[in-house]
Figure 1 (spheres, rainbow, N blue to C red):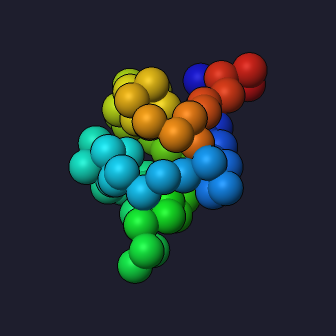
Figure 2: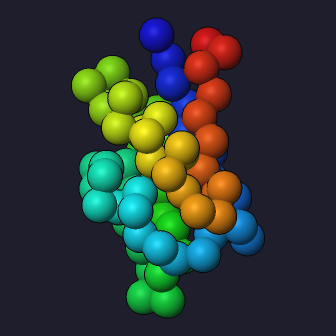
Figure 3: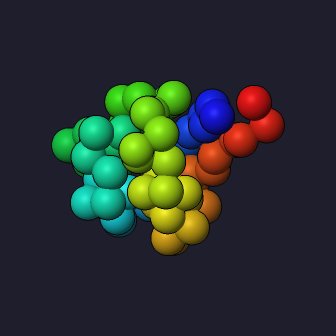
Length: 67
Protein backbone atom coordinates (compact mmCIF):
# COMPACT_ATOMS: atom_id res chain seq x y z
CA UNK A 1 0.00 0.00 0.00
CA UNK A 2 1.24 3.48 -0.86
CA UNK A 3 0.86 6.28 1.65
CA UNK A 4 1.60 9.85 0.63
CA UNK A 5 2.30 12.52 3.22
CA UNK A 6 1.30 16.09 2.34
CA UNK A 7 2.22 19.18 4.34
CA UNK A 8 0.87 22.72 4.15
CA UNK A 9 3.77 24.79 5.42
CA UNK A 10 1.51 27.86 5.69
CA UNK A 11 -0.53 26.08 8.39
CA UNK A 12 2.51 24.87 10.35
CA UNK A 13 2.77 26.41 13.83
CA UNK A 14 6.18 24.89 14.57
CA UNK A 15 5.15 22.66 17.49
CA UNK A 16 7.52 19.91 16.32
CA UNK A 17 5.36 16.97 17.34
CA UNK A 18 5.74 15.46 13.89
CA UNK A 19 9.53 15.55 14.15
CA UNK A 20 9.45 13.86 17.54
CA UNK A 21 7.14 11.13 16.24
CA UNK A 22 8.73 10.45 12.84
CA UNK A 23 12.17 12.04 12.40
CA UNK A 24 12.73 9.98 9.24
CA UNK A 25 9.78 11.75 7.59
CA UNK A 26 9.79 15.25 9.13
CA UNK A 27 12.33 17.87 10.14
CA UNK A 28 12.10 21.55 11.03
CA UNK A 29 13.72 24.70 9.74
CA UNK A 30 15.43 26.96 12.29
CA UNK A 31 12.21 28.94 12.81
CA UNK A 32 10.25 25.73 13.37
CA UNK A 33 8.42 25.27 10.07
CA UNK A 34 8.05 21.66 9.03
CA UNK A 35 10.23 20.15 6.31
CA UNK A 36 8.94 17.01 4.61
CA UNK A 37 11.87 14.63 4.19
CA UNK A 38 10.00 11.64 2.74
CA UNK A 39 6.57 12.11 1.12
CA UNK A 40 6.21 8.34 0.55
CA UNK A 41 7.61 6.68 3.67
CA UNK A 42 8.03 2.90 3.94
CA UNK A 43 5.17 0.88 5.34
CA UNK A 44 6.97 0.54 8.67
CA UNK A 45 6.41 4.30 9.20
CA UNK A 46 2.80 4.53 8.02
CA UNK A 47 1.21 4.31 11.47
CA UNK A 48 3.56 6.97 12.86
CA UNK A 49 2.89 9.26 9.89
CA UNK A 50 -0.87 8.90 10.46
CA UNK A 51 -0.38 9.73 14.13
CA UNK A 52 1.68 12.81 13.23
CA UNK A 53 -1.17 14.03 11.04
CA UNK A 54 -3.67 13.45 13.85
CA UNK A 55 -1.68 15.29 16.51
CA UNK A 56 -0.55 18.23 14.37
CA UNK A 57 -2.01 21.27 16.20
CA UNK A 58 -2.05 23.39 13.04
CA UNK A 59 -3.59 20.73 10.81
CA UNK A 60 -0.63 21.12 8.49
CA UNK A 61 -0.13 17.41 7.84
CA UNK A 62 -2.37 15.00 6.03
CA UNK A 63 -1.96 11.55 4.58
CA UNK A 64 -3.38 10.25 1.33
CA UNK A 65 -3.90 6.52 1.09
CA UNK A 66 -5.92 6.52 -2.13
CA UNK A 67 -3.15 4.63 -3.85
